[in-house]
Image (cartoon, rainbow, N blue to C red; front, top):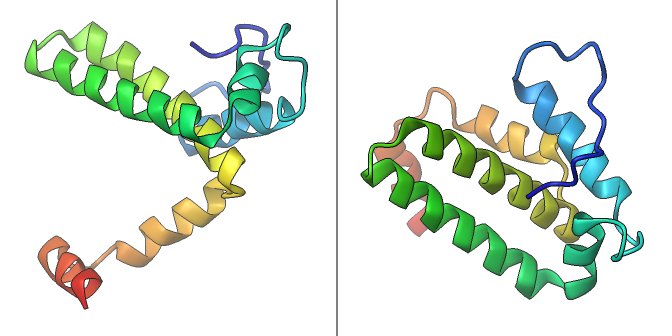
Length: 120
């Protein structure tokens, strides 16, 4: 679960891409922080393998919630997954803008064609 004391700018009154940008900024600010005071700092201190493991766990928990058809659980697990994904991005030196740019490049491209292009 994310640190409960992360602040989101008041101007963000809707959940959208900007919310993930704000989450990323808060997460990245915890890098090198006190692991005793911040769960996020504790994840960074444990290293990339542990962070990646958490992303995998949350992905599986999201999928299980979806199969169980529990909408509230899917929402909750999705939030956990996105949080842990932002921790992984920060650890890897990846910014949300890099991910958004990748997604933009894929718009207008057939998913089938895009997957075929990756195999080459």
